[in-house]
Image (spheres, rainbow, N blue to C red):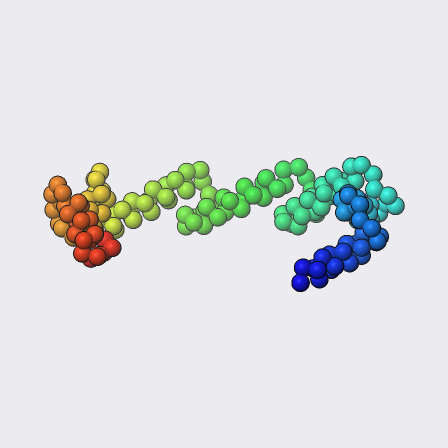
Length: 166
């Protein structure tokens, strides 16, 4: 199998390089030649010149930005403006509003967080420590916490084969 793989590599190398013998650097040179030929074709030139790739890349990116924005011609700032508009639209949608205003996301996150805490604790008004009290109640199964309850529960679970679940 090893010999077959080596022979296949040699055959493929000869075809890729279009030569019978390999010398160090042949692959790099061949790849460089092929890339330069393609860039020259993209620039509709006979030969590659330094800077052609940058021009092709710049043109391609500008064309993609025009496709994204729906603009006929690229103008500086188009991509930034498009991203800004899309983010604001997404935030407005997340907040249930038609149009984004500064602070909408913070207000919405605070509102959702408060609702989640109140739902978790089962209380109508949050006080500092309510989440911790509820978590301990859920873990120990006891309504009123006393010092040592968590340790007793952990040790009980450890020695009874439970995984911390009631």
